[in-house]
Length: 426
Image (cartoon, rainbow, N blue to C red):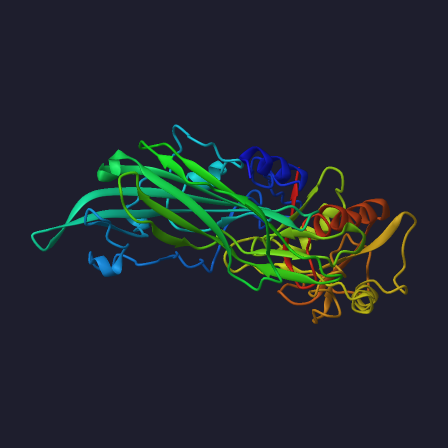
């Protein structure tokens, strides 16, 4: 299939042409200075790095039996995932076949470190690959060529379609000896999980030529989750990279593990199926100038010790709750109808009724603040368990609550049990 057709079909699926972080935000401290949050919810590093990858006939020794089949000239080659600590920075210089989806700068700046970086919609991973060519002379294997290839992986998902793209771009950083005469490269996409979770829709990575350091060739695979009504599936996809000399030699193959795990679902009713990278924890950010009373109560509750804000390594996120009776129980415990409400005011509870940390499902006792107009709950309470209630402007309360669905739960495909953070900006 022609590369142009691949790009066209990807755009139909709504996949991002250029990756970016999910936007920066600056936290505010309406009550005191204790809420200091790192800005934005851009890339995150997987705390459980995926396997670096493996090589078929890996270069455990330069023996022909451990690498490719010896060619008629007695030359063979070995390929393996290289040492990321010794790899150069993964700068992209003079592209050959330009990738359909350029890898974002926040991935490139880390170099070929073998770490997976993700947002809710994209994932990237860069690894070095060592390709070594041998010839036996007087019974001794001698290196007659070497190339260090930088393999760039990029995955792009879309929250409103069951398709995702997995791209592989390869670029030589070093080429010496026979390898400096040029290399053939090709790729084959692979599904590492049950075929029921990922079906290959289309791909293109024909045999291409890398002639110089800095040139690059790319392949694009498009995967599809076979939609299951009300269901979900998690998929891992990868690439098999094949390399050989333009001069006579056999193919050497490296299995490059996936850049990020993808989860697709059809659990959000009218929104239809879509896919995200579930490891990335999304952040719900409100404009404090639009919701000033809301942006006073929620940070005050967090500053008193309740979870939800990303304050550092020990922080605890909120987790979505979709069960209607349990949500009602949370709301009724934090904001019972017996609480008096002034004209234009409504009861705001934190953590939200739509979270497992809510008043009933989260456990603990209630708290409030002296400006909240609630006399049945104590003030001055701190700690990570329990809930807070406060009377605030009902329009702000309703509007801020509606944004949870319209800007977080639905577009970020936050399912039952999924974690998320909260934040505000001025």
